[in-house]
Image (tube, rainbow, N blue to C red):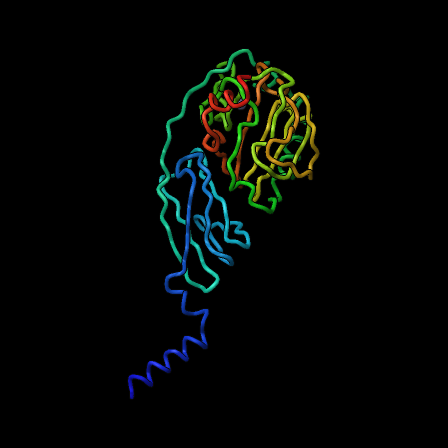
Length: 285
Ligand SMILES: [Zn+2]
């Protein structure tokens, strides 16, 4: 009788605290993406979860979806902590693979873009202020979870992470992928998102767009000859954002596609398939 009593008491306890019971095992955590320098990772926990990466609070949506990324120079390890709605926690140590970077020498750059003259400082300051303002907010939504497409097709003329020398002078690494294409070639949204900056007058970038795919995972399109969208506008994947050009610090018409997440520069090429396939799919152009 004693045992039966204890069993019944146990049942009662379970019935009174139904939420407390699943806590023991119900801590789902799925991570997909590239655990390497320049890689974007998409995480899926559970509704109501919170997460931090190396102590920094991540944006996690109601469904428990979140993004994070690893800068070009990220160290070998990162620590992800997830706290679930019931208070249970999971800690994961992530191994971040190191990559090797190319050296690229770019010659024939107009000297005003290598060592800007004093009269350029006002325009550079305006450009910086616009970018800083756009980076202050992060869009809601999780458009970064889907497949990305190449925003334009053509020969890849510059890869992410390479150490760059302009006219022989070392400058910061190349934070993006370059696609050579004629001026006027349409640039399409690689994924849906909100345009957070659209300006034709940036000193180094020329015509520049920021497209936030959610939680600050943001595409940058540079050197554009034409911009067809406005800041605040929502675009779908494949929508035309504008056209390829050679404005700003460029030696010829090409698209520079950059990607950043909360201060970390990521490699957009890791998100898309081989260029040859994209060219074949577009009918050989
Ligand atoms: Zn570039």
